[in-house]
Length: 114
Length: 115
Image 1 (tube, rainbow over the protein chains, first blue to last red):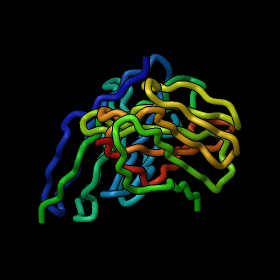
Image 2 (cartoon, rainbow over the protein chains, first blue to last red; image 1 turned 30 degrees about the vertical axis):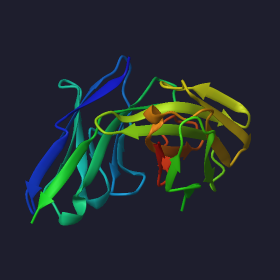
Image 3 (tube, one colour; image 1 turned 180 degrees about the vertical axis):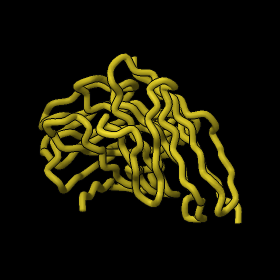
C-alpha cells in the first residue's frame, strides 16, 4: 500500500537559510508524488509534482524536490527561505497505479525567523 | 483560473444537527473529493465522486454521506453531527485525463465546530 512519512511536524529556519522538508514514501508501484503548500486560512496549492519524467522537479516560488528511488525519498528544498514561505507543507502520493486518490503525509509546519 | 468554492468558511453547529457542506467548482471537472484535515493527521479522504450521482467511500466515511446531483456541485452531509466531527473540511476537484497525475484543486476550507 502507498504511504508517505514526513519527518518533523515543525521546522524552523532563519530568513535566507536553506529550507529542507523531508518526505519518504512507500509504494508498490512507480510512485507519482506531490508537494502541496497551505498558507494560513487557505486551501492547499500545488508546489510541484513528480511523474517520472525527471528526478529533479522544479516548482513554484523557488522550491524544488529530488526523487531518489534508492532512498525512497522526495525531499523539498529551497536555497533561501523568505518570510512568505511560512506555511504548512504536505507530501502526497497517488494511491494506486490508476487512482485519482491522494494519500497525504501528516504535514510539516515551516516557521521562518527574521 | 480554476476556482473551487465552499459555502462557508466557519460553521458552528450543535450535536445531533444535520449539517450540509457545499462545494462548487467552475472548471467542469469530473472528479471531486471531500477531505477532513486534523492537526498531526494531514488530510484524510472522506468521499470521492467521479461523475454525477456516482460516489465512492474514502478512508473515513463513517458518519458522513455525500450528494452529487450536478457536475459542478458536491455536498458533504453530516446526518447527526457529533463533537468528534469538529474539524477543517476541504473540497477538491480534478479533471478526468489520459494521465492520472492531474493535480487536485482545493477550496479554502470550512472550519466546522460541533458543540
